[in-house]
Length: 116
Image (tube, rainbow, N blue to C red):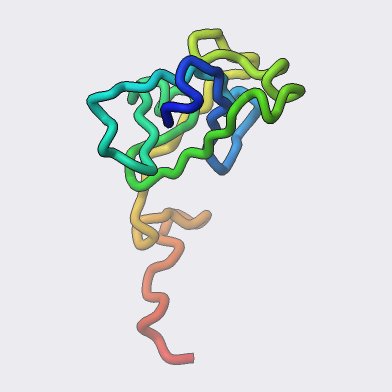
């Protein structure tokens, strides 16, 4: 994240928050090789996917120093700890034109091209 908080704990989450397991505690590590990179959070891709349902299509993570949110930090799991809730199973993404309707057709078929 940044040099001033290197070695300190940070709280990381991403909206929408599916359950409390999506808020995780990490140790911020400053890497001098990434000094020229700004406004970027480097995170293990497996952690991003498993704990934050990130799919790398422009996801935005929010980060806060744990010292500024001590009550939340005390209740937050570290990324390596098992979750308290059942794992969220993400459905595959579909184009809106492929979303099925309740009657077995396509929910949005023909919309937008018909005049009302």
